[in-house]
Image 1 (tube, helix red, strand yellow):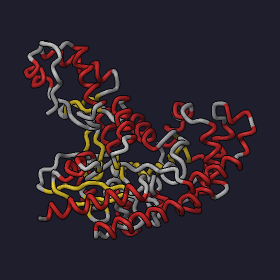
Image 2 (cartoon, helix red, strand yellow):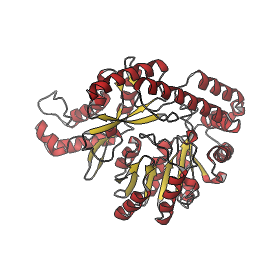
Image 3 (cartoon, helix red, strand yellow):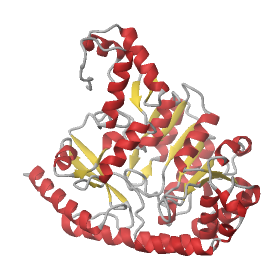
Image 4 (cartoon, one colour):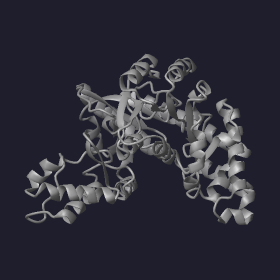
Length: 444
């Protein structure tokens, strides 16, 4: 349990808030970590419980933490301290970070983006430097519609495409509009930390559905809906993060039957969909699924624009609120992605990333003697409870399953996520050698 370092005999509200922020910045408290219960912390610090309560409230006002009745106070993903701390860790030369999925702008991706920039007709117009205009929004909607048809095998009308700044923002946007504090949100057995943080911030009750080697189990989902009366599910059917699972067409169709029969609203995060062959889940339950995707994993993380696509009746309500998201989308980013979509640059970038992932996975397999799926950008690997900490001592940063788990793990074994998407060959090779030797020590 985290406890602040006492710099004075009795800590006041401001000192305690500063201690929380310092702990987040220094990674003593990580995203999703729970702070001590208020009464216990008050006892440990020998202060009035009201002091701790006010400090937690002030920390929440600063965006550092969020609370949920019955589940405590947690560090939020979007706090400036947490984000800045993550950036600083990534920049340390002695750290090899295999915990995140971030597209590197290698020479090929850089060259493709330069070609897009040269082909961008908007850059010589006033619109390029202004707030995004309606005609650019319409062109983006049409370009996304055509791309989804030719690449993902699913048809939408342009007016069924809503631009949003990012997939994470899209999740927050939908939850904020459709759910209220105390409502049930269904998720996979392990899910994105961003989804967990969003649920905590809005005071939602999270329930996790069992998964197998193909992801969500239809019978388990059906049973969970009946038990919880849940009305909304967030799922990642393509290269699910953290498990790397991609559902088959057959599994998606089986899930669609449950979703339709239970009239469940589904947010399908499809950010890795362009790397998978099956059509989105939205194809099989078009009136129940909101497809959420973008291009940060295949082309450019720096051009912040994604989309929500759907035929669900609530899309009209979302459209009426969409103005708050459009102010956050730059015309520069939108025109860049429009140019990429209309000229098939997205497909070029995707093919390059797939080839890079296959090559990197083959490298890891050959060194670590594993059988990782070659097309996946990340993998779910079995380990003992202390493996991630031991890897960190050797400069290898891995993402432990606790970052993705809705409930605490009581088992003797655990998992970690290994990502190949964002590191150089040299770093990946070094990391694989170290992890191989650590695995041998664990087996002995």
